[in-house]
Image 1 (spheres, helix red, strand yellow):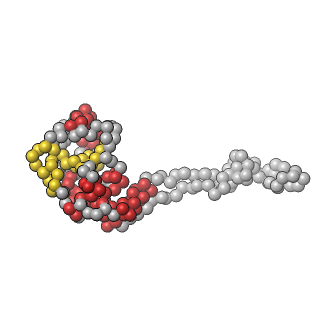
Image 2: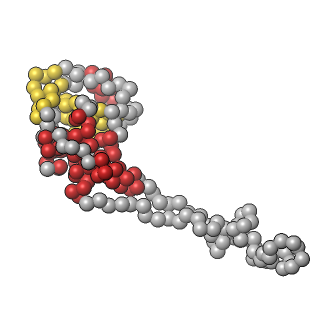
Length: 208
């Protein structure tokens, strides 16, 4: 697949780039995509939820009513989960929700997601750009030039660029991601993928 390279104003530069067919033109594997997204979302969970069971609740252990003759069930402690303020029965405790996929499966999932984006014409290739200092207004101008204002988009750079990142981090619906860290979930959770010219080689070396 060959795409035109545009400048930051959205105008054609007269040049084009060939996207690797083994990454951007494969038949998407939907089950692998599901596994990768499931792993990503599970790894976002902190797992710090906790509840107190009856042995952790501070309440008196004095028998608060007589054993018989009340017409109700016997009870010897207000820590009982049946009573208000008592411990919780079978409540949640801290746990690790993280999952792990094989490297080849994760690579196939990212290739499948990129192929889906390419098939739906949701990829833009823009020439490399940077800023002398963090300038959010200039980044907004780039988004408007590419006609992406109000749309979800991810700008993919070959390496971490502090000036680009600081310029775009506060813009709604826009995120900046390094090519090697781009996940299947992030690819599918955006409307447009903006690849800088140099990031294509980085994606190729990471997924090949």
